[in-house]
Length: 388
Image 1 (cartoon, helix red, strand yellow):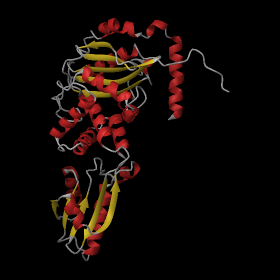
Image 2 (image 1 turned 45 degrees about the vertical axis):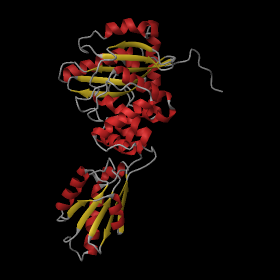
Image 3 (image 1 turned 60 degrees about the vertical axis):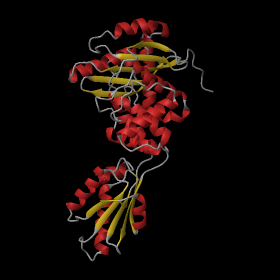
Image 4 (image 1 turned 180 degrees about the vertical axis):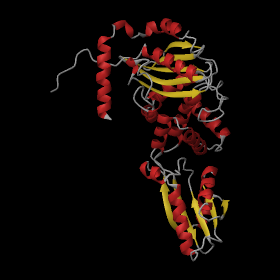
């Protein structure tokens, strides 16, 4: 990875050595230039804001207070509440124990958001393995039950319904068909017998990093609900709505135009404004506590969902943009940070009125890339001191 970044730096230096000085817009030139660039029919009247990362001053805005569909840019709110309410170093533990006296298997979870159905992937990525838990259970039920898989029941706590369904299906295929009952964590704890499995998730920090880098909808949804629970709200859509508004209130950001239908951005009912998201990004960047979010964002032309962006559309921006992508049919969004010589800009672009289909989507993405390419520039010193 260090070699990759050095290579990118060399490429950027080469690119900028041949670009004319006026190619990179200064703050005073951005409004007129962006007004012209955003007239592109491929973007179809987008909402946009550009904020000076040092001062918080709004450099440019267009439709900044208009309610728009954020798509996966919504995950920036998920990131904010995850860092605020969950311990970044913590993991989610799932145990399986057997109490032969009451012929019961006890699965005690902590709502691990990323239990894997593939054992090899689980071990490679330090995830909990459902097959491992399933096979260990079968082995020990037979051991305690004279080789039989009959007359045992399963009680569980702290599992998502999908994980319960996956376990039930896994066991049924292997002729273990116990009655399964959801219980409280206290009930599961009291019933625990001999522990046969203990599986952990990656850390919350690693889960969030993956979510932002690859825009994982399932983990985003679950992290937001876990954050809502930790904040004292219900672990559902209503709780997510409340915890999102609470974090905005802590940052003194107006939430009156926010509409929350989910935490992943998949719903078309979600609504934000470019101004709201711009303020959030600015304040997250200013608070070291939330550095995890900045570091976890995809880098243009380098990583995650931005790995193929800017390479041909705006080569000058490769390696200089950290941002969250968003995609729905008819919607292309991008929000994050762009380096521009001696400063950093926060930007939000919400194009949710474009034509439907992949062709229109790709054209809109390219147009957004080209806009950012006009302000992206590395901070290369005028003189480089010789090595000591």
